[in-house]
Image (cartoon, rainbow, N blue to C red; front, side, top):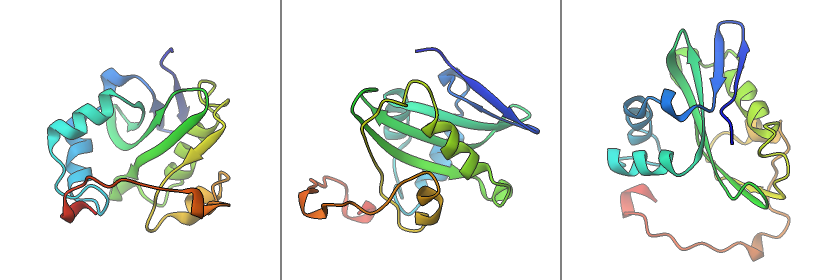
Length: 147
């Protein structure tokens, strides 16, 4: 799999893992509702074992998303964010469009994600509530404060 990058105005999205700012991603995630208190080690492991997309302005990372995938049948979208200073510029929508049209991810048959507050963003790229929620199961091993 090659690394890719796309540009739009002064922003860039890249899949180059060498460009990821692990400290910035950790700082954001540890304060998020979905990963509150997560350790740096867990963030590093999750990034190293996922297909990651960084959003950059002048080389500084301002956004992030990752896909946990087998590149064939399944993709789980996680940790999507744009830092507050750059929200409202359409970067999250552009990031989602870039992910969903990435050539290495186009053949994925089933996508999923979990969100508390961004349904409108994901609906714009085709996500919707599960057709058969009774088929969905989970095993949650997160500490109580992260549930």
